[in-house]
Amino acid sequence: MFARTRVAVGFALLLTLITSITVLAKGGFSFISITGSNLKDEVRATDPALTTDFFAFADFYRDKTEAPTDPGAGYEITRYYIDGSHEIPFDRLHYYPDTGFVFYDVIVNGSSDYDGGGYMANSEIKATFENVLTGHPQPIPPVAQSQPITSVDPTQSKPSIFETQLITLIAVTTGLAVVLLLALRARKPSTR
Image (cartoon, rainbow, N blue to C red; front, side, top):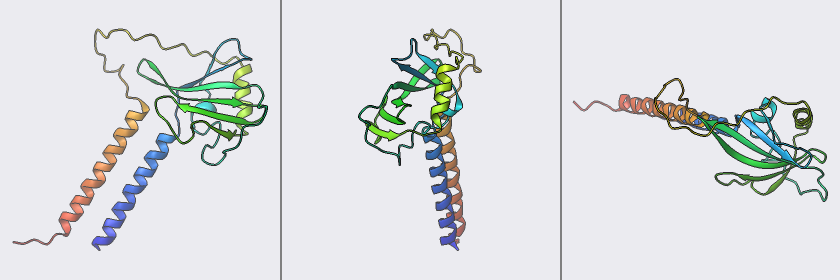
């Protein structure tokens, strides 16, 4: 009986960790900035099709490919999230809609296995991307430079998505550990 309980708790913990890792990898970017030789100015977009999923432009796990000899007109895309009053770049890639090619440059403050790799673009992203470029997207004003805080307003301070997910992961893991300890304690025979 004890082995079944331990296995069940182990599976619950494993599923929690897998779910948390998947949530962290999903993206949830606040906006993307797009630059390219065909654009006069930087374009910023919040279209959910471009910002919600980390793999919106390409499936970096499965769709690795060689760069075409002439990929066509390309656009540099930087994906951002906003933390408080700061725009924080997460990663940078180049997208070539004519040939359906994505070059993943780099995670800005780190590295990954995807850095410097070429990938086949998600075919469904082209129409959305072109609509953003031609559809006069609503501009996103840049976040103002940080000003000294003169008073603290609790309604102004919101944790970033990563902080929220980390807190959730810690709370769930702690809860599972407590349940496991209680199960272990209940199984120990009394020596009185």
